[in-house]
Image (cartoon, rainbow, N blue to C red; front, side, top):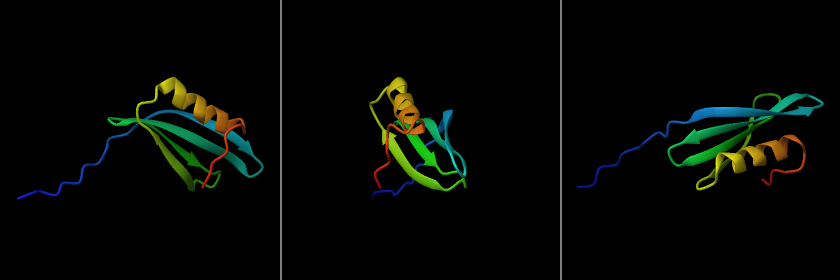
Length: 78
């Protein structure tokens, strides 16, 4: 008999990059979990725009992605 188990990944906030917008500060939050790093993009009102997971990528790579978004270099594709 197979057991169905739901595991919640523990995620630790590593750092936050801010993006200046006319309506306030948007932010990209970098998290570390057991399966790698992820970035949560949040608009100035606090709404989640998108979450990207990056298994196998280094912290430096994920930091660069978040910073590039904050600088307007990286665009979020819906």
